[in-house]
Image 1 (cartoon, one colour):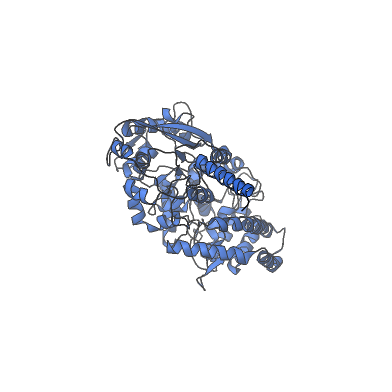
Image 2 (tube, rainbow, N blue to C red):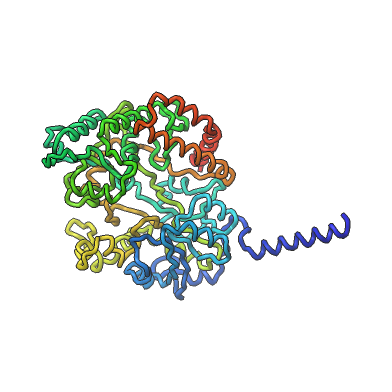
Length: 540
């Protein structure tokens, strides 16, 4: 090598090493070394978590329903006193989270924790492999006994939260696998009083449901002479499509997989939007829509307009988390619809995974108090911690009734200031809006899914629920790059054609041409990547 070229090479290498050292972001995935000072300040069990008070910097996604000052809420004031840990909250409005995340990760000033910032899986892997996000595997085992016990009891949670490189880079949000109502989420509701007026039994099949909808359309059930009743109304068509998937034999691995399931005959991974069963489902929805049994403007209706129509008693059926909480008094006329039997039987496929979210709690490599941080969070996976997080403090926000159930106090449910329950609650807690790490249990969560009507509706569906529900898959960096373009094109086309078939903009006679077009859009490569992701999930 000539002297000039040799010198230039050495200068370039030195420059690259300096950049690497300065960035602190290319160390690769590893669990940090915990020094003696950190360990000595942390109590292994009980409260307080630390002997000498510490401050942690959290960047947190803020729901529109949440307080503007977290440290003034009862929850975090109480927990600071209990744990001896102060949180310096940087609140980021939900609609600005993505931009703020990206700017922060591109900059040089990281928080100790990204909290409820909805960190995408591809970023968890990318920055985890760079060493920006801390590798959690052994740290969870050492400092989070409550979460560890849950993952041992329900191994599918650990499997779903583990990335292709074998590592976990975040702490998950868990829906208790025994809390059926929250796993089902949005349920189908039907007007019991209208069934009685029509002298009809509760529908048990897709044909009987059609007959009910048709009877609602043809009868002036509210007696105002206008025929303004809407047989099926909602904010979108997706809810109705989801609750009918089981009857037509598609979507048999749950709602986290909107396009993939297991072929009942071959037991292989299937892209179900091109299947015969999905064609039948779309044909059924087209029949309902073409006969005016589905709200005509369901694709464009504003959510508040839809809620108003439900509150005015105009809907004969809907799919929503709770008709009672959204429609008020009118919602009390609704009861849960059972699983409907269709061409593929009486299965109910619309439910989510107990691994609800993965990006709600991410520890970064600037955190100098990792044992304390993880102990701080692990409390919320315990029954006592979940009670504090969702309910607040006994005597101040909730009471225990004669049955032993937790109930919000009257000052919460009937605000003296005329506020809604959510507005009143925001003075005390911060879970409203979702995305939080922790566990959602029926005993300590008093949202819409815990209402007696919701529990009853879930119990009707219990005999027909799925035996296995898949979480969202995780992908390698290379797979993510390939899949992003394929998904953007294929999913967009499938969704657009689905809507056109249902509304009649495209006739069902063009189904085969639609299937052929999907295949030409790279479906083979798409499925090759998804099959690899499924294999890894099963082998985790």
